[in-house]
Image 1 (cartoon, helix red, strand yellow):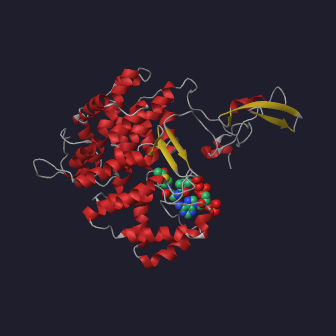
Image 2 (spheres, rainbow, N blue to C red; image 1 turned 135 degrees about the vertical axis):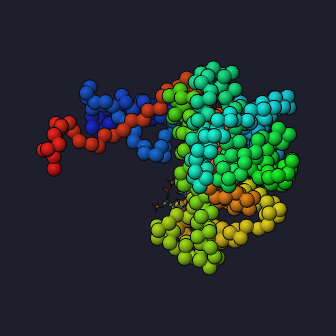
Image 3 (cartoon, rainbow, N blue to C red; image 1 turned 30 degrees about the vertical axis):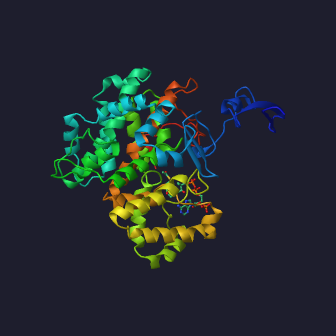
Length: 428
Ligand code: ACO
């Protein structure tokens, strides 16, 4: 059997043969299907890219029906169990797990770029203390672009590596300072003796003690959460990073765009929305009433459902287990019972079963973050820190892909035909 698709255009009776590669037809092949010479050619219409592959990628594999997630071929469960976030970041960016000397160099480089320019501190001070920290993170990521003019050389590999290191290194500093600014606490400078997650905890929570010692269970839990959030192939924020990066904008502004996409409650803002939802439900007795309001379409069960997963999100499974370890240290989050009850009811209710709605990564992560002492506004910020490595890996892959050009979708124009300008005194 030939790997082709035969299309008959019933408008003209003409037949076309289109190659199928990797289970995909090339949309540009449709262009030759025309009614006459003046016809632009057939396009495919796919609002929200529900069935359109916009790139080839060797970074992350997801099977949404089976609930499989792999980074560069390695199952997420094994990485969460045995790896460390910076090792995973290296894997995403460079395709292979680092050797011990590569890892040592990588950790050294990231650790030695955690400081940010002092003017950024003044930039942070310019924001109101009660402004959302994600807004500040997005703005300061873009601001970093103004410090590194050479970051515009996006096709220079060496230069790219330098800025990739800088971004991964500085994300926790910006995030922690955004948090400290909300509390009116002095900013804490990075501590190079600590690991990536440990240093972040120090910059967040250090007070008068001369040396902050992160709790090993919480430090490891945060590192695992970072691994789970590091990449998720062509999601909304990654597509934003790729689209902005495709204009050859520098990585700082490309990532600011990605972070802005992540901010929305249907994406990285969902963990914040889950906590607000659980707090609003407030009591186990109120769960059935809330579920029936969801079924009536009055609200969404936040943290449920996914564009790709039509099965239990494998990250949610790891996080559920992690929650037990964290609660052992911090005490049980009282909202956990409400979450468990919601999950039990939803997984047995026809409405959710029929629509294949299962808990996603955000359903339990917020409970852990809250137990660790983070306010809900910090949740999307905590998501953005590790996702930076995924965004950068995807951005880099896009730049090295000879098939990629500036992102520029087509449209079906639905507006007026040409009409003459109407002077103001003749309108309406
Ligand atoms: N609660 C109740 N009903 C839902 C939910 C939900 N969380 N999610 C989807 N549905 C329903 C829809 O109303 C729709 O029902 P219908 O067929 O009767 O109209 C059906 O399930 C299909 O949903 P879509 O919106 O078409 O699914 P889509 O793939 O476009 O949306 C999304 C995916 C945005 C994640 C959606 O499930 C959602 O809004 N979930 C809540 C927000 C959330 O948790 N987001 C985090 C996603 S993970 C991440 O980004 C890190």
